[in-house]
Length: 288
Image (cartoon, rainbow, N blue to C red):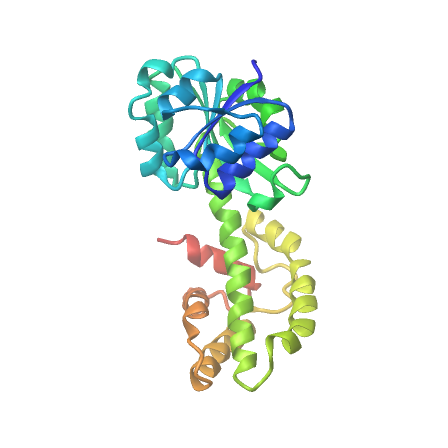
């Protein structure tokens, strides 16, 4: 595979990706709908493309890093004649249905397609702390992985193009759940005058300790057995969850973050699983 690579989309993340490629010595072409976004990169040695079609036609590997799939469609709209034989690496955050549609469309042009999920913030790109999920064409990944390594750690998940998008969204769900829980907890503690700084020494080690339960939960989830060696059953846990919701209301804190957990716990209790581990709530999530 040639070292030529294009970045289409120069927001904060796209710019970070382009900078990492330049640092790695790759021949890098850049394009953005607002041309001035490329000025600093061009000054560092990148080539400026005047159109998205030119950026795609110039390189063997094209990385799309755009706001959404509407922007992806717009960037690819006139590129049909130059897509054959190219590798498109789409790092735009999207839904599984969007990924399948774009993968199918590009396959019709004879394009190798990789979807990706960036598990990093822009300042992390190019460091060992960044990792990026990829799925789709195995040939595309093998051909481009040396270039893509400039961004961070590569994690190829398989040929189904939706694997990266679903795992990306799942990891973000875990992150937002953690952040949301922390923010709700801090608001609740704050309702009695505890500052966030004062609360931090309590909540930080508590969350770290609770993370050690995840391997056990993973085993229970994969086996479907949530009743084995239960340490703290759902009946007891559900009382605490309901008390959190009620206390939030009485303290003037919006309980919206915890209400879905309460609903799912009650659903699981009603199905007769009061003596199971709280990990069993995942079965209530899965039930239609």
